[in-house]
Amino acid sequence: MTNYKFQPAADGVDPKSVPYHTFASGAKIPSVGLGTFGSDNYTSDVIAQAVVGAAEVGYRHFDCASVYGNEDAIGGSLTKLIDGGLPREELWITSKVWNDMHGAGQVIESCKKSLSDLKLDYLDLFLVHWPFPNSHGKGVDVSSRDPHAKPYIHEDYMRVWSQMEELYDVGLVRHIGTSNMTIPKLELVMRDARIKPMANELELHPHLQQAELFKYIVNRGIVPIGYSPIGSPSRPIRDRTADDTVDVEDPVIVAIAERFGVHPAVVCVKWAAQRGQIPIPFSVKRPQYLSTLKAIVSEPLTEADMTAIAGIDKNNRLIKGHVFLWKEDQTWEALWDLDGTITPWL
Ligand SMILES: NC(=O)c1ccc[n+]([C@@H]2O[C@H](COP(=O)([O-])OP(=O)(O)OC[C@H]3O[C@@H](n4cnc5c(N)ncnc54)[C@H](OP(=O)(O)O)[C@@H]3O)[C@@H](O)[C@H]2O)c1
Figure 1 (tube, rainbow, N blue to C red):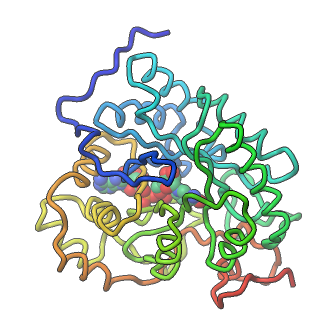
Figure 2 (figure 1 turned 180 degrees about the vertical axis):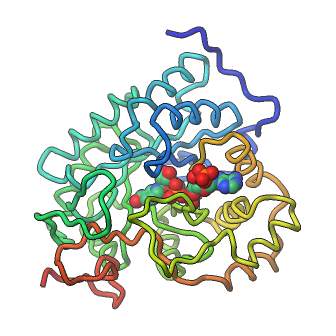
Figure 3 (figure 1 turned 30 degrees about the vertical axis):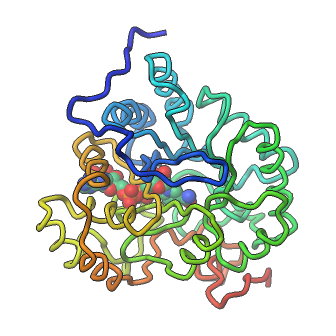
């Protein structure tokens, strides 16, 4: 117990003014969340402190994952906030099962570990982080491969999914979803799942708009959560290639940012929320996370701005996933089923 008393910041945003998406359950997820993956640049403690600061300025939605290695520290912050007077029901906490916990019973074990680390008795949303059981060590480069790596095997994924359904049945998680999926993979899961995915987390920023996949999930009532909404300018070296473009340097984004008097990062987040996905920008810096939240509740982008940004898609995937490939001579495109069929084992 600390003497901390939760106090909304005077210069913050009223969380009630933040728009939200409504799930079929009636639950409301705030239309912006704070990412918590520090990209190897920030310590767990710094990120955990940012969670408290972000809640004070009005964030209620936090995107966590076991693989980020900081759920225990974030759990300390959540306890501080809740004990300090912020009602648990006002928070939206997402977590994810990592690729090395896809075996029988392991998804449930991973969820229980996340709950224990986060010091919560339920999660608002639990996601399957990647559709492959392939893992890698911390800080490896793009040539690193899991010697036991496999392609997407639908029967295996459904064994993961049935554990997600079980977690939902017993109330440990209130919603379940997928991440890093493609249309052909989702088609199979939608066909075979007893409880359909309720949300899908995918990379979305002005230079990777994934129009077809976005439309597919929205049309099926799946809530789209957009990761790396700013184009992940501080992502790990393993996720960088020479051809990558930079969203925050795009002339269209920069011109709009100048007109609004904000950083281009803020325009990316504004665009995301206005387009209908839920951006989850990462930041541990108060002026950044505050300006991003303010962007969601301030004067919207014009229709001309939205059209201009729709025109700068470069199909530039940043989180390519090389380390999850299962064959030596493959390129990362194999993970993303570009020809509309699931890439086979051989
Ligand atoms: N499901 C998945 O597989 C998956 C994959 C990747 C990410 N995610 C989630 O998505 C979250 C966000 O993605 P991300 O961290 O890759 O990238 P991001 O949110 O696109 O970029 C974060 C970086 O942008 C800069 N920034 C943030 N707000 C800013 C502002 N207002 N003004 C100027 N610069 C600003 C910061 O850079 P500096 O720190 O250098 O200031 C920050 O580190 C992650 O934390 C994680 O929760 C999920």
